Length: 286
Image 1 (cartoon, rainbow, N blue to C red):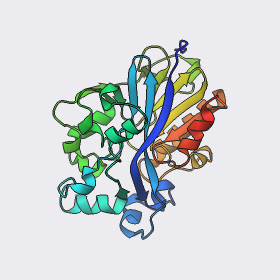
Image 2: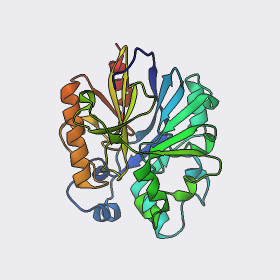
Image 3: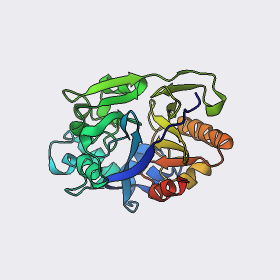
Image 4: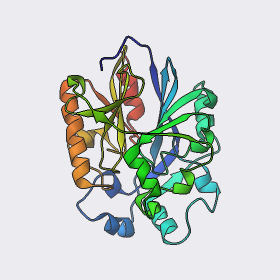
């Protein structure tokens, strides 16, 4: 799966900001339910990153940010306990220009030019742009897609009513077994374009079906877009994991990424809420 000579660019934009609990960023060993209900501290605001890939076959997005309706529509979240828990988990700040359409326009793109959307997973702050993307193909892992129809998906972070919107073109994918030393230690993958430039790798942990996107192109250091596998790349390289998800899964996926870096010492990891992502991406350009 070696990449052909192909010219692409990658840009990061943000659909507002979010404050989360410190234990969300890095586990302190306490159970999720305990710190969710008892923590009194928030982090500083963190970006809600969307990665924009200009591919010769069309504009590709990795994640779509947060929907501003989550602040303006009092019925966006289910009532009762679920709404209370979501309010404990995250505090959002999104202005009128923090929509996906407006943010794309700010970097010179029309949302109508988006051909493919890849979702790292289906949590609310990654699917917020879906109402604006009825014309695009939406790619998600089949494992993650199964969460939509599971019992009480909201308690697993999936607001099904905001995922199963009319008119969306969903493509659930699996990562198939491969023998490819260029992506070792990963032994399964999904080649989005068939040219090795955009390769999906399974990185479960934050959710069972979380995906990362390996991006290879001339003029750019190799990139790995990891969603919420980490919230801070320095913590990732130190082997320190977030407090949301399966600890075993997060540790295993973090270890796999570290091993991939052994093959690519100049690998740049870009997360969904890492404030350093913009500077890391700027440094990746040669």
